[in-house]
Image (cartoon, rainbow, N blue to C red):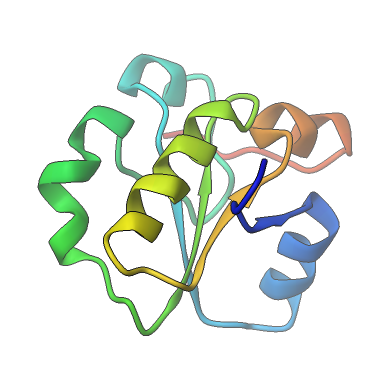
Length: 107
């Protein structure tokens, strides 16, 4: 997507393995999260992002994900409009995460 910074599953797993500091936010609904989350992911449903955006740090990398990457791309655009520069969309979302053999945790 134009103007949206994205990372892929390999980059995200590299960040996790290297101990890089970042926030991992799941913007799916609570019902969707009950099917599993990326380990370390925190719940922030897309509809609550405008209310909770001020709680996020602009000084830390933030990776957002959803089922396929579409809603999280919207979330990245929203945060970029509010001055967040260090926000990234997980390309392909949790579907790509699972497709590449990565494990999920229970919410």
